[in-house]
Image (cartoon, rainbow, N blue to C red):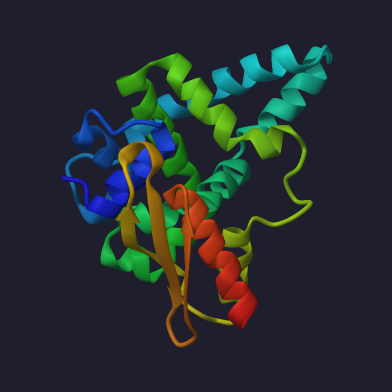
Length: 222
């Protein structure tokens, strides 16, 4: 079954608690774990769902010709873009990897992050249908589609790059506390880098708290 932090992460991602935990767990499982089922089948499905959702979105946004739309679509569904979105939500910490893959930096691999992001889209499609999944994609890809990507790094991406540039292990996020009623829950998260230190922050969601914690860490140690 899903660990508590991962359950909260997926609930935040999908907008509701995962209805089929084993399927979502499959989407997070890399082949290096030796498990009978890993993310590859869901990745195959998610790739197609992502392409359709983005194509539909772009079609409604402007009246560019086919060539321009195709060029933009290819950029938005690329492995790099999928990995960028994955990093922005802290997906790496929830991927199930074998020891060797983890030691080799699999949590921050563009290939693995991109594949798992697509697998999660596949799991969403199977459990929630296209409309809910397209809504999730629009939320996650909003900055990229608006052309904002690259103008200012997301705090979690900036911290990840800072750690790599300083030859440190990847940041680790940990839920400290969840409080308040379900409709107005608050989350306190700590982020730490081994050998450097730790910072905490609170937000209205796990994602907001992790982002604020990354900002606090960079202000203190960056």
